[in-house]
Amino acid sequence: MSVFNIFSKRQKRLRGEIPQVYSYTEMPLRLRVQILYIVKDVVNADPHYETSDPIYRRIVNILRREYGVLRLIKDHPFQEEMRELIKFVITKETEQVLDVMEVLFALMPEHGYAKSAIDDAVKELNARFREHRVGYRF
Image (cartoon, rainbow, N blue to C red; front, side, top):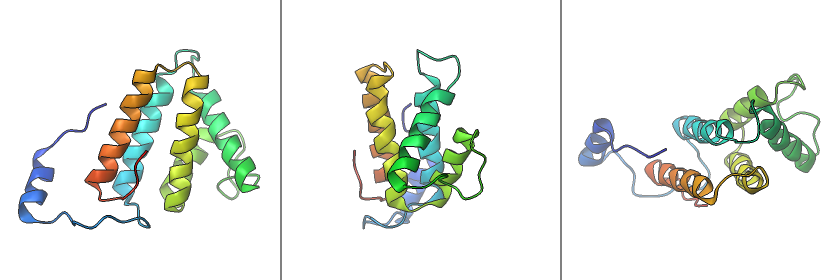
């Protein structure tokens, strides 16, 4: 999916409302939501599954194991990995959101995604980082 240079973005740039400094600690909610759309686009394009649940389950289980927790979100039902991942991306630290994207990009080749699909997702993510003045890049 491409990033559109919509009217409101152009106007903010013209008014000087876009900061020149990059942040490495804060990740705006709007960016987090856009990241979820990137994940959704990638997962729903999986050619091997009728449903997207298996890759969500793998992402969540990898992160649970790496963090040494039973659930990413306290008291969240075990069988709702997609919703757990959404809440995780919305509420957790910037570095943990980056963990989600790193795991997703690592799993994509294993699930048969074309290099072009991976490259497109990475390009959009990096464009969103620049747009929100977040100083990370994949």
